[in-house]
Length: 167
Image (tube, rainbow, N blue to C red; front, side, top):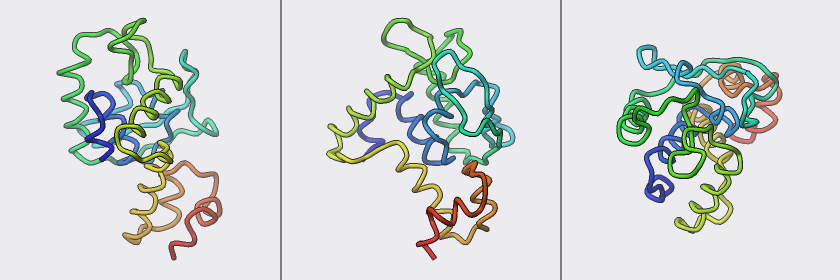
């Protein structure tokens, strides 16, 4: 329903990225093209100072595997919407000024509100996609330490505290 609620490939790719990597919205908004490795099927989450205020929690880098379908969505977004735009960021303003500038938390919030209205999912937040990612990993039997690492948690205890009820 959420993907169907997206009218733009950028927005659809953002949702897929959050769902398939467990990234936080701030981590996604700070992504640079060099953080996406199509050949390795990985997304690097690198802490850095960003003009749009996006940040990586705890200032700790990590690498998360991602399916080929995510990179297919990325390629389609680049080809059909991003085009030859010169920007350091993956998620940028494409239809409003200033064009090519990094997407902000405010812009992401506007998207969230539009998606809630289109889908009827009134309580939906981007963080729900992170929880879905983690829940899927745990239900598949992924080691708790790996889940903690992929989510960027400070310790396994943090992960157990949030998702321990799934056992």
